[in-house]
Amino acid sequence: MEKTAVTSVSFTTEKSLPNDQQSKVIKVIAYVRISTEKQQSNTSIDDQIKRIQKYCDENGFLLVAIYVEEASAKSIEGRPEFIKMYNQFIDDDEINFLVVFKIDRAFRNFLDSIFFWKKLGEESKHFISIADNINTTNPDSKTSYYINAYMAEKDRDNILFRTSNGMKAKAEKGFFNGGIVFGYESVSKNLRIVPSEAEVIELIFNKYAHDNWGYKKIASELNIQGIKTKKGNDWSINGIKTILQNRIYIGEIKWDNEYRKGIHQPIISDELWNKAQSLMKRKSYSSEKIHPGTYPLSGLIKCPQCGSPMVQGNSSQKYKYYQCNKNKNSGKSVCSSNLVPKDYAEKYVFKHILTFFNKCDLATILYQITISNLNSVLISLEEETKLLTKSLNSFDKKISELYKLVDNEKMSMDTFALLTNDIEQDKFKTNKRITEIEKRIATKDNMNLFENIEFAVTNFEIFYDIISDSEKKRLFHSLIQEVRVTLGSSTKDRKIKEIIYKFDCDDVNEALSA
Image (cartoon, rainbow, N blue to C red):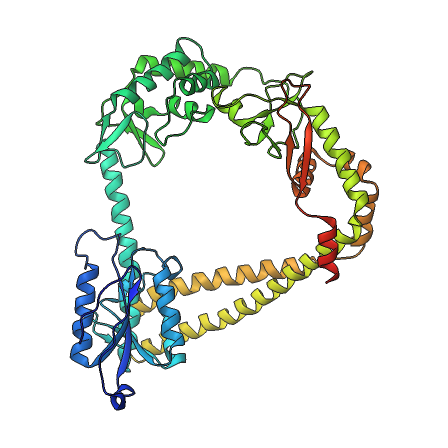
C-alpha cells in the first residue's frame, strides 16, 4: 500500500488497481486522536497511523482517508474532525469500515458508543478497534465493544480524578497549580518574582493602605505612567481590587476555596497586607451612598471620544450624568469623562421613541412578531417533545439489549448495573425535560394579546410611568441599538445627534406582508 501523507485536517490515499477489481476492494476510513488527559502510555498520532496502515495492508483494506483530531473532549460534540469523519462514514455507501487503533480514541462517553453501535446496524457498516481486538463483523463482538467503551469512559473519569487529586496534593505542599498572576512568572511550575511587576504590587498596596488612595485613583496613576496589566490592558477599578484581595502576595496559594502557605516568596509583608484589609473592611461597612436613580440608557449611549459605552456617572442627588465607562474605571489618561446630563438624555430619547411609535403601526407589528415567535417556539417545543419521547423508547431498548447479554451469560450483573446507570440517568433527565416542555405549551394563551399590546402602545406615556426601573431599561435596550452624542467642549454643549433603532418600521411591515 502507498504511504499516506498527513495534511492539517485529513488525508486520502488510493491504490492503483485494475478497474475490474475496484468494486471488490473493501474501503475503510480511520480516525486517530491523541489524549491530552494521558501523559504516560499515550500512543502518538504517527504511531496510531502506522499501526492502522499496517493492519489495512495485512487485511487487504483500502484506506481512503484518515481523520486526525488535535482536540480532546469528553463527547464527540467537541471534536470537529470526528464529526467530519462520521458524516463521510455514514453518507458514503462505498466505505464499509471505520478503523481506530483503540476504542478510547473514538469514544470517551459510553452513550456515544451506544448511539454509534445502533447506527452501525442501521447502515450495515462495521467498526474495528485494533488494540481491543474488536471487529463488529463478528457476532460476538457486541459484549467486547460495550465493555471496552464503558471502560474508556471510566478510565477518563479516573484520570481526571487522579489529576484533581494530584493538583490537590501539590497545593497542600504549597505549589502553585497554574494561572497568570501579575508580579510573578511561572518557571518549571514554580512562581518566581518579576521585579518590575513586584514594584507595581508594592505601589498599589502602599498607595491604598498608607496614602488612602481609592481604586480608581491608583488605576489612573498606573495608566498615566503607561504601566499595563499582565495581558497588556489598561488598569481598572476591578483590576486594582483583585490585586488587593489576592493572598498570593503574602506567600499563600488557593485551592478549592482554601488558602495555605505556599513555597513561593511573598511580595508584601503581613503588616502591609493586614493594614490594607483592615481599611478595605472599614470602607465596606461605611454608610451606603444615596442612589441617585436608575440609568436606563447605560450601555446605549456611546462615548463621543472613544466609542465605549457610557454608564452611571459619579453623580450627586442634584447633578446626574452619564459618564464614559473607560474614564470611570481607568481614569482620564485613558479617556475623558464626556459627561451627558441624565435628565436631558432620557427625556430626549423618550420623545424620540414616541415619534417613532406614531410613525409605525406598532401595535400590529408587535402583535404579528409576538404571534410568529410564539408559534415558532411552540412548534420547536413540540418537535423536541417528539424527539425526546422517541429517545425514551431507545433507552428502554438499550437496557433490554443489555438484559439479553446477561441472560446469555455474556455479561455479569455487576457490569450490567454499571452500564445501565448512565442510561437511567439520561432517561430521568429526558422525562424531566418533557414535563417542562408540556407545561410551557399548556400555558400558551393568546386571549386579549392584541388588545393588551394596543393599549400599551396607545398609552405609552402611562405605561412608561407604571413599569419598573428594570423594565424601562429592558424597553430601551429592546428598541435601541445605540445613542450617539456630539463631543462638545463642555457638558452643556454635548447633545444627542442620532438614535439608531434595532429595526426600521418600513422594513418590518414589508417583511410581515411578504
